[in-house]
Image 1 (cartoon, rainbow, N blue to C red):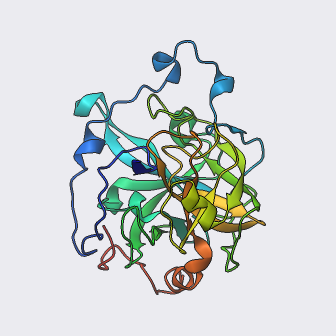
Image 2 (image 1 turned 60 degrees about the horizontal axis):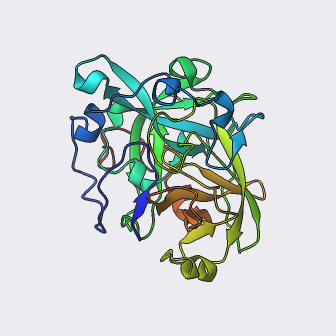
Length: 303
């Protein structure tokens, strides 16, 4: 069975440690520079109605999700010959006035100067104009991160602090172990079909999913460890590309960070998330707003 992280920009995944955070790059990865996506999803799906645009098996989120952000990357359109524009790649969750929690694989190898965050909106039309764009100053990946294996979590610091209002609010991250049988909320702008082609939706999507135990997750074919949590509700429902890094909220707390699944979405195999309760101390230590953690782009953890 093939497993893949759930970003919009597909990267080749191997089981290896993240390279030294001191390594920096000023170039956009090739897989970003060559992306050309139509702004109109009906260009690729002429017979597809707007009502079909949803997380696989989910619905459009009608209420505000004020902690949800869109992590975007600066890419060149028209196969590298067109103007640069911001493209949604991953989700994330605001945890205080400067920091966002996301998945490590959303940050792996990225240049912070070509990353930004759109907050305060469910609608990414018109380059996220209904929200506010914040530029990423630095990020930090968990030191034990191994792709598709463990510790798939990271934090980002924005250059200017978030302005909290009814549309932008932090979420409390959980220190409580979440067992199986718990109803949780997944939100994101991920692909809406089992195969990751075409455009991601412009409207934020949501789905209520049920957690399963790690033993049940292994029985269904996912080799999870204690730092991970799984959901499975039914065939035809689940996370997909572009949902990576986004929040799984259980009991009104951030309990999971979208990590990986199978190559095809919603086909009856559980989705895997980083279990936030295993990293609550690490998050707290590295999201201090008074000068600790990854606070400046000059520090080693910046990309």
